[in-house]
Length: 217
Length: 217
Image 1 (tube, rainbow over the protein chains, first blue to last red):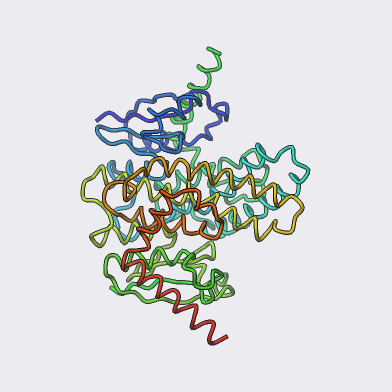
Image 2: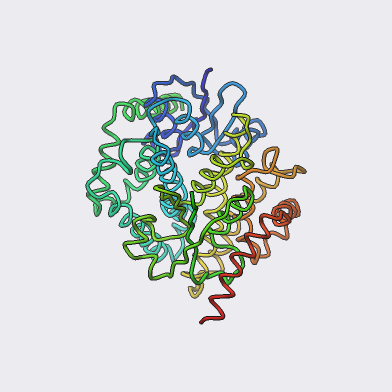
């Protein structure tokens, strides 16, 4: 069945691969599944047709036959369950990989996203400097814990899995913050992820969308 | 195999059932699985023995035989995959239920938790009122969208599932905010969840822990 995902028609990250369609593209490249991309404008994202498959008006979504779903974590789990290579066969190792998929989106990502939200909504407020320091403290607590756990291993739990796609991509959102430079273990982990051919193909595909949108605007 | 979960030795919510062990207890009650609870102090939560199974120093965790895992979303999915009654059999309906499990923890919960973090860390700041209004605006956007999607249906997608446990419990954290009173659809949804015998048994079990800790302190 044909897989169709959605992505920003005009990505706010300007082709840096930070939008959440990137993790879905990466997973599909890892398992070697071709996919179509339907680009959605900010306006269309809030219209009934899109809200019918994504009630919060966001991207990405995945459509495959009669199935329509959203949430990058759920989409990656769906891909990993249907195509081999992104989840271990051993039941306990599989449960731990899914643990890390949830940890990426519900423990690591919220303070990192909060940093972006604060920049947009509080960047002009007199308290912004103090707020940013508070957010960065929360982020560093999580990075300390993740770095300690990762130690000198290559991936979160044994072999590379969908959890590493989620976690590496969540951490990428900190790249322009300068904070990652304090964490050589995590920087090396991100680089290992980015060195994968599937990552590179996914990155090129999302960058091509941005280049096209730039050329036509 | 015996299931053991962890919970706060002394819950900061004073027995109101808002800590994340509540959703795990609820799921285990729904599927009729007995479980042991190991209570963890705030100090022990940051010690190596607990960090070995929960690297971010939080509760809940689940241990079952050789398996140790964390993240309430992953734990509920594990329970739902191993015991019948919390996920639909139909493959597409199952994928949508997992979508909603991720939506609960990664789309709905972050602004709700942010409200609590702000109260603790910014409650004494001169900007707190303005910040709270910004957070509540983000929360209302999500509640509007969720309420619209839920409409006049009983549960998120067809039959009651693990996704409803996650979502109802996430919404419960707003109960003292007064915001839920603006959302009769969501208030009724929460009440439907709380009316389930399994919810009531789980609530009583976590309340008993608080009553015991209060009596012994």
